[in-house]
Length: 269
Ligand SMILES: NC(=O)c1ccc[n+]([C@@H]2O[C@H](COP(=O)([O-])OP(=O)(O)OC[C@H]3O[C@@H](n4cnc5c(N)ncnc54)[C@H](O)[C@@H]3O)[C@@H](O)[C@H]2O)c1
Image (tube, rainbow, N blue to C red; front, side, top):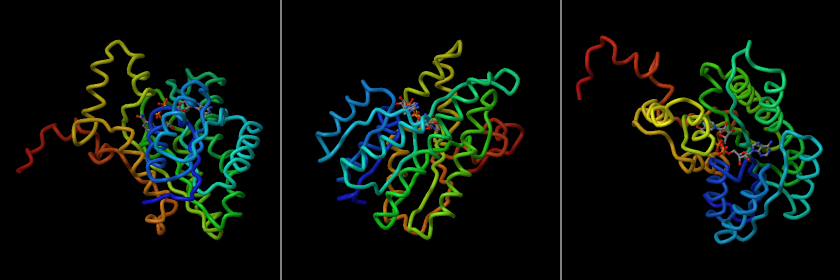
């Protein structure tokens, strides 16, 4: 897997899974455009990555805003000469059910998580077509195919991203553009740490996140980033429109892991 002479754009790239993606691509000789809302951490990430990659720039863009995305993509193309790979990764987490979710929060989560990936694709795909093709990877979630309680807007946004992935794969295959979606389980990032801090027992919530996975621990950002890099590479040339679980087997046990412990004969080694 080598991305020499490839321009890779990552959104939500200053932290967590996005930052791990930037490290992965930079370590494989890509030119990397870091997009994030957060100027301070974005600039710090760019500085760190310049140690390992030739060309790394930070672009302060709110990916939920059409005008900023359009102007930002134009700036990236001017600086790098084109775009080959797009990682639509920016996202936020909020908690509410249909009756408790405010219209403002619904619009915010759907804009940041889902509309952003549409907007980025809208302006990046024409640039990929000029280069003769490209690859798009979208960070969905296990919540693209299953639901977690009290997370209606997040679940809907992540289901929508899988639909977007499949639409992009279908519409742009003739332009040699592939689109795939990763479905991470619980990954130890600042977003997850923030989420567990909301409850009365953060340590207990973290331990529960570990137990959700077959190996007994949650994922690390670089474990997702490696799969994203593979999907973006030519090694995945026959993969498009796929939903790839990177979830430590979280989605495997019907009824959840606890259901496997209830009254069933113990598995023989
Ligand atoms: N951490 C998990 O357990 C987990 C699991 C499944 C899916 N995901 C998804 O992975 C993606 C990355 O999550 P993470 O855990 O690394 O989170 P994170 O909070 O560590 O990083 C997200 C980054 O996105 C940026 N961002 C937020 N809104 C933005 C906007 N409007 N424009 C540009 N940048 C913006 C933030 O500033 C931040 O740097 C998200 O889409 C998330 O839904 C995370």
